[in-house]
Image (tube, rainbow, N blue to C red; front, side, top):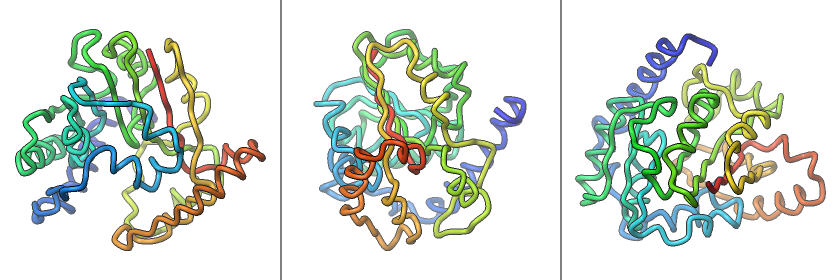
Amino acid sequence: MPKATNQYYEDEKAKWDSLVDAHYAQHPEKLLLRPEQDFYSYVRTDKVASAYPGTKDFFGDIRGKRLLEYGCGSGMTASLLAKAGADVTAFDISEKSVATTQLRAQLNNLPNLHAQVGVGEELPFPDASFDLAFGRAVLHHLDVDLAGPELLRVLKPGGKALFIEPLGMNPVLTYVRNHVPYPDKNPVGDDRPLTYAEINKWGRGYSDFHYHEVHFFGMIVRAFPYRWHVRLPVLHKVDRVVLRYAPPLRRFCRYVLIMLEK
């Protein structure tokens, strides 16, 4: 982390508290799920999760599985996971994010979703507590040397983890992230998208570890506001062909999907 850990935590808390206030404090109706929404619909339709075909089958049947969600934010994916039948424990550094996740669980009648304040570098859970772990855009906020062993510790033998993360190997994209405004852009904090060296550190100690870069041409959709719901799935198909036959281009993708099995 570029700053002392305690200061980094305080900056992150303030950042995510303010984002939750801006999006949900006055609009709790945004926390309601539609009847057709659950985690399986998410991995089939999400702009990033659906970019790699293997995502939808990686966890298999999650009903009754104990699942840890990293960085729950407003609780959207935690709720989708719980609605699909997992027993979900979610954590976030932001107290307001946790409160919003708890409210979302209540509004959607999800007693199998529990949220608490926590950080990935020091997980407040016993060894081998979880069958599964999931997170989106959270690992790049963590110190892998501290948080990596913690994830490995709390997963059960044979447990699986899936993370969707920004990839930081494209210098043009890095400049855009840091300096160019675009629709619905979150504030740039002290976190940095992952490098291959960091991805490989996250994979230490697992019986199976692989990752898949996505969104080369697919990153074009990020130029549109979220409310427009632009997906352009044809770009995912183009990317799969291009990245298969021109693997050096993978490092310039916008996201990476990391899949771990203990």
